[in-house]
Length: 153
Image (cartoon, rainbow, N blue to C red; front, side):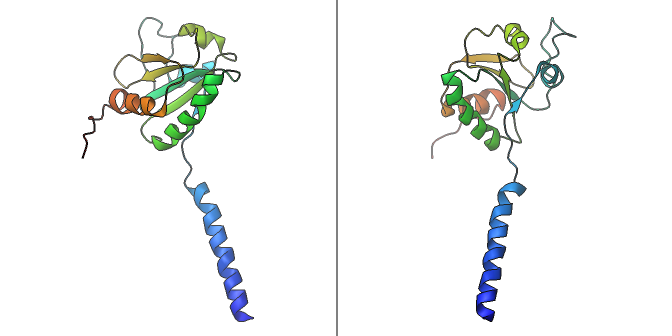
């Protein structure tokens, strides 16, 4: 009986540890932005309409999307994975063009998904369409983080 109780207690302990681990390692996720949050975290075009000035403390990707957009639904899990992978190095923001039409108009969004890649000390660059994960990684590594190109082994 003592062995059964010990095994049961050990099993409960292992289940508790396994269940608690993902919660303790909270991964970064894409953040939904409203106009107010965009003005604060990314670019306050109301105060400084003539010159781009990024407000963030690390590079960012802004995803202009809509919930009804098929290509947007394809890139959404890719951006979620990349936010978790690069969480300490970049921000991944999302802007619903139907909820924030002023932001969409400000950046001339006419086709979605549209991505704004924002490095720290340069002007942002725009990409349109559903990009594959490797294209995002290449843009992040070379343009946003300015990592040296990897060489084959």
